[in-house]
Amino acid sequence: MSAGWLCERELAPTQSWASDAYWIKANERHGHRVALDSPAGIQFALFSLGFVEGMKNFVHQLFYGNPIKNDREMTGLANYYSSRNPAQAQNAVNIVDGHGKSENLNSAWIVVWGPRSVFMATPNGEPLKHGEAALVIADWRFVVRVANIDMDIETEKLDALLTSGWIRLPLPPGILQERKTLRPVIYMDSRLAAKLPMRTWRGLFVRPMDLRNDEPRVT
Image (cartoon, rainbow, N blue to C red; front, side, top):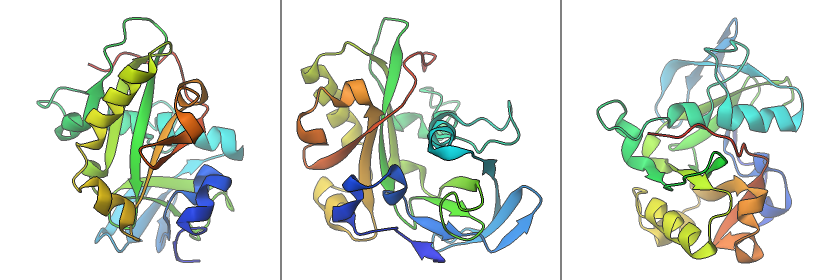
């Protein structure tokens, strides 16, 4: 496999999160970095590869990986979407403040996977086979972080926050869910996901993940 999804959209909820993502083969390597010539139009751009051992560590890196602290990790979503100040980050508009007051803060993520939005890159285009991977955000508009969520949040407030995040995506809901080149998925801690019926939210698949409940406040 050089590029694509691991299975059809309908089957992805029965598989691991790797079936949500679009996977691309890196066409050039240099040390712990790869060059991509991708459908997203990224020509020979370099991205760090994270060495991962098992799916749990992979999930940690996907959301929290920080190559500044550990040069063997890839850059995770939380480090891409880390500021709500538009003067510091262009993607600040895609971070929703959950207004949590406790020290047990969490985030929910809306990620729209696809060859021109967000995808994963590996040396051979397959997940985990060589223990290396890179998260590539080709278009930051296709990720929304709902940050600063209290773990005891009420379902109605969680629904309102997800709605606020959903409308920040660059395409209308119907188009996002119907286009074969896009695969939107909501990720949240399993305890938050339990507040939503049938692991879905307005028709979108909600994948429970083992996420931190002690995230630093996003300001």
